[in-house]
Length: 116
Image 1: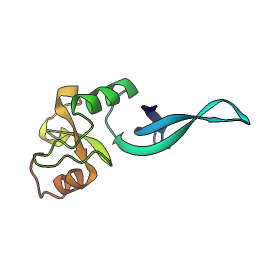
Image 2: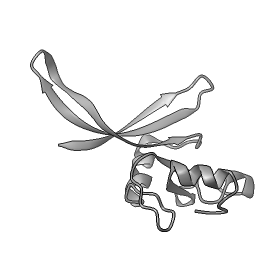
Image 3: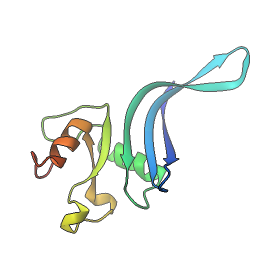
Protein backbone atom coordinates (compact mmCIF):
# COMPACT_ATOMS: atom_id res chain seq x y z
CA UNK A 1 0.00 0.00 0.00
CA UNK A 2 1.39 3.40 -1.01
CA UNK A 3 0.60 6.47 1.07
CA UNK A 4 1.85 10.05 1.46
CA UNK A 5 4.28 11.40 4.00
CA UNK A 6 4.94 15.08 4.68
CA UNK A 7 8.30 15.82 6.23
CA UNK A 8 9.29 19.23 7.58
CA UNK A 9 12.99 20.16 7.67
CA UNK A 10 14.20 23.38 9.29
CA UNK A 11 17.10 25.11 7.53
CA UNK A 12 19.84 27.20 9.17
CA UNK A 13 17.68 30.35 8.93
CA UNK A 14 14.79 28.70 10.75
CA UNK A 15 12.61 28.30 7.65
CA UNK A 16 10.70 25.03 7.54
CA UNK A 17 10.74 23.29 4.18
CA UNK A 18 8.03 20.67 3.70
CA UNK A 19 8.60 17.76 1.34
CA UNK A 20 5.85 15.37 0.23
CA UNK A 21 6.79 11.79 -0.65
CA UNK A 22 4.98 8.64 -1.73
CA UNK A 23 6.05 5.88 0.62
CA UNK A 24 5.16 2.29 1.25
CA UNK A 25 5.76 0.03 4.19
CA UNK A 26 8.32 -2.64 3.54
CA UNK A 27 9.04 -5.68 5.63
CA UNK A 28 12.66 -6.70 5.94
CA UNK A 29 13.23 -9.72 8.13
CA UNK A 30 16.22 -8.20 9.92
CA UNK A 31 14.49 -4.85 10.54
CA UNK A 32 11.60 -4.60 12.95
CA UNK A 33 9.20 -2.83 12.78
CA UNK A 34 8.47 -2.41 9.08
CA UNK A 35 10.23 0.54 7.42
CA UNK A 36 8.93 3.16 5.04
CA UNK A 37 10.50 3.15 1.61
CA UNK A 38 10.26 6.25 -0.56
CA UNK A 39 8.78 5.25 -3.92
CA UNK A 40 8.15 8.70 -5.38
CA UNK A 41 8.60 12.40 -4.88
CA UNK A 42 5.46 14.53 -5.04
CA UNK A 43 6.56 18.05 -4.20
CA UNK A 44 7.47 20.70 -1.68
CA UNK A 45 6.44 23.90 0.07
CA UNK A 46 9.18 26.35 0.95
CA UNK A 47 9.19 29.79 2.54
CA UNK A 48 5.49 30.12 3.41
CA UNK A 49 5.26 31.32 7.00
CA UNK A 50 3.10 29.49 9.53
CA UNK A 51 2.28 26.65 7.13
CA UNK A 52 1.93 23.26 8.81
CA UNK A 53 2.35 19.73 7.47
CA UNK A 54 -1.42 19.03 7.61
CA UNK A 55 -2.06 22.25 5.66
CA UNK A 56 0.48 21.21 3.00
CA UNK A 57 -1.39 17.93 2.61
CA UNK A 58 -4.76 19.74 2.59
CA UNK A 59 -3.62 22.05 -0.25
CA UNK A 60 -2.19 19.13 -2.24
CA UNK A 61 -5.43 17.15 -1.81
CA UNK A 62 -7.61 20.16 -2.64
CA UNK A 63 -5.67 20.64 -5.89
CA UNK A 64 -5.73 16.88 -6.67
CA UNK A 65 -1.94 16.55 -6.40
CA UNK A 66 -1.61 18.22 -9.81
CA UNK A 67 -0.39 21.48 -11.30
CA UNK A 68 -3.20 24.03 -11.40
CA UNK A 69 -1.98 25.78 -14.56
CA UNK A 70 -4.68 25.34 -17.18
CA UNK A 71 -3.74 22.56 -19.60
CA UNK A 72 -1.04 21.12 -17.33
CA UNK A 73 -1.69 18.12 -15.12
CA UNK A 74 1.79 17.20 -13.98
CA UNK A 75 1.74 15.25 -10.74
CA UNK A 76 5.44 15.26 -9.82
CA UNK A 77 7.89 17.95 -8.73
CA UNK A 78 5.07 20.10 -7.43
CA UNK A 79 5.41 23.29 -5.40
CA UNK A 80 2.97 25.27 -3.32
CA UNK A 81 2.95 28.88 -4.43
CA UNK A 82 0.99 32.09 -3.90
CA UNK A 83 -1.71 32.97 -6.43
CA UNK A 84 -1.20 36.64 -5.57
CA UNK A 85 2.37 37.27 -4.41
CA UNK A 86 3.12 38.76 -1.02
CA UNK A 87 4.74 41.70 -2.86
CA UNK A 88 1.37 42.40 -4.49
CA UNK A 89 -0.39 42.34 -1.09
CA UNK A 90 -1.29 38.65 -1.27
CA UNK A 91 -1.54 36.63 1.94
CA UNK A 92 -0.45 33.25 3.27
CA UNK A 93 -4.12 32.25 3.59
CA UNK A 94 -4.83 28.76 2.21
CA UNK A 95 -7.20 30.23 -0.38
CA UNK A 96 -4.25 32.20 -1.84
CA UNK A 97 -2.04 29.12 -2.16
CA UNK A 98 -2.02 26.74 -5.10
CA UNK A 99 -0.12 23.76 -6.43
CA UNK A 100 2.08 24.36 -9.46
CA UNK A 101 4.63 22.10 -11.12
CA UNK A 102 8.17 23.39 -10.71
CA UNK A 103 8.30 24.44 -14.38
CA UNK A 104 5.22 26.68 -14.14
CA UNK A 105 6.31 28.04 -10.77
CA UNK A 106 9.71 29.03 -12.19
CA UNK A 107 8.23 30.52 -15.36
CA UNK A 108 5.87 32.58 -13.21
CA UNK A 109 8.89 33.84 -11.25
CA UNK A 110 10.64 34.87 -14.48
CA UNK A 111 7.67 37.00 -15.44
CA UNK A 112 6.57 34.72 -18.28
CA UNK A 113 3.23 34.13 -16.62
CA UNK A 114 1.46 36.75 -14.54
CA UNK A 115 -0.74 34.24 -12.75
CA UNK A 116 -1.11 30.50 -13.02
